[in-house]
Length: 283
Ligand code: CAA
Image 1: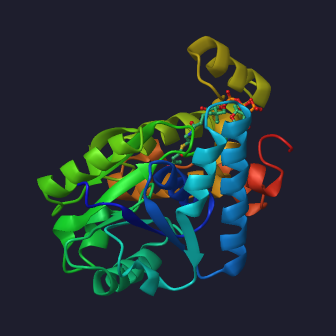
Image 2: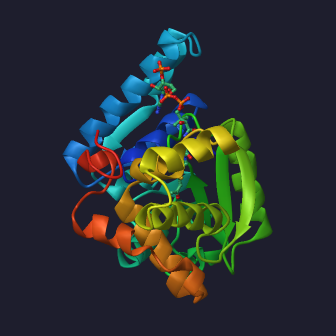
Image 3: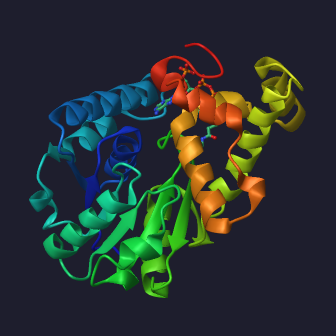
């Protein structure tokens, strides 16, 4: 466990850069790999802004920010991961792309290294089956925004070993996070419960039960949720919500997971939430 000091993070998007940041803050050398140089530049800037915020608030000494930044390196080639002792994948949510990447990581990394995925809904068992080390493949599902959210959902695939799960649990604790184990069924625990709530909020809006503000206020003030479900859907991305609901609907076969037609219509219109500046609200 103490041997884990060099982390590979593949994918420098919102989740990848947050994951890289928390490992660097925990004292690990982190190699961030993304094929797009622009994504790497954005990731660097996002991490710098996030760390600056913590320094500003007195939550992080400036020297620790500098040390964390010095532990990060960025590049376009997976070969940089030959020396990694733990890998987290956070690329696009496409089974084919992830399976191809896991096969590459299996070739490039040392045999004992755990390969984890930040996927929110793709089968860990299917990713493990793309490698010759399915016992060392697991889900490490962080929540957005990663530097602030303390949960990590650890997903155990069909072939994942107890030892790999224990190593990942201990690593999460080193990050100051709370790991929770989930089995590899569609949506794991988090999205199995979160997405039907968001979907129901969208159905309530579609049926005119309440305005977006009314629905969100009920859940914020009535249930003490930090964000109402429609605000949260805009934050996550409506395309992401739809994709996860499709996985639940197809994978579990129960009509209760049927994506709301209004959600489909908004995604078709390109109103995807905060990232397109328009979803249930305008930004
Ligand atoms: N790094 C550092 N600081 C950050 C930050 C980051 N990445 N992101 C936000 N902050 C800062 C903000 O800038 C803000 O700072 P100021 O007070 O100086 O303005 C501070 O954190 C608090 O933010 P907000 O003012 O926006 O207020 P908040 O109290 O609402 O906190 C929140 C924000 C933590 C995001 C909170 O709203 C929350 O917990 N929301 C729910 C988030 C959630 O449910 N995430 C899970 C989504 S599901 C998922 O990720 C998985 C999936 O598979 C879909």
